[in-house]
Length: 444
Image (cartoon, rainbow, N blue to C red):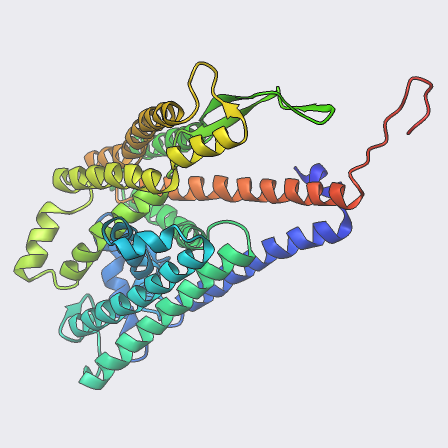
């Protein structure tokens, strides 16, 4: 890949490098904000509490925020309010006719829905921020009281600080998506997970040194991580190539068409979106209840919805299945694809153009989506079951690996697509002329 990039013109190469550096710079800016705490909170007491939460829902939420929750930084809420608002916006798009009409208006309609999503994010962030501030003001964790002067003014200030941090994180993610490479929100989550990896490895080594776990369990865990990583790479690269034939047509004295191409349909068209959506929906009520574990709601959540519990795994699987089919249904329009193929003179061999093609594509996508959904469930649940069965406080499991590997692969694909686009643009600016050696040996 490096040799291919080196062949690009200097200005195009600089443009691609700027996009990559822009992405890395904004991710670095996000990591700095993770260590900026909200004033008035005893972060040492909170860190002592989270140090023992490696395998439960609070440890998982803290890892998804990149440690911002344990530091109680202005980025403590992370991207979860935005993800929750995005889920509601996509669900309401199917239910509310006005939003459905906006989604069909092209770029202008999508911008309007994005604006509604931002408003929803701010509302959720204010509500969550005030609930967290109110809970922290009335609770003691670990080394003592968390808040030195828990006045109502401090609660308002904390809620506004967390909301401002969420707005800034949302802006960072959108800037990365628009001006950098990759999906900004997924890259922010991936950066938080990767940042927690050294700490998780250190905690595992500490358990091994204290003889809490033996070497056999660690080797088993490493084997699970390797198998999950290999499985993610294998399935994420899988795609069904549908052959499309184009009919011949004559325009004047020239004949066009008569060629064939492939329509790739990925095995996992939804990517890492279903696990992220499912995790965010499960984490929000669990997190709110977990901030007050002595209450009846906290006891119920801790007993029945802890990661690794059968009820948690069952709900997680159902949510992944739902969001996989839901996301594919709103991104893959078989009727539109069949109509476009028909307009361009394309058809699938053995399938009549029009409604029959749309029906064939929809059945094919449903089968692939089911296989992809089962793969996502297995990757996300199996490591959790294994690590919980062998009593290892290590939550860098299937969901985390899926997000990291899936996001990395998608980012590399976008870099490769951008590189190919730059090479194509350079070819067009040169007039689309290639030097071809003739039979006499001369170039023309």
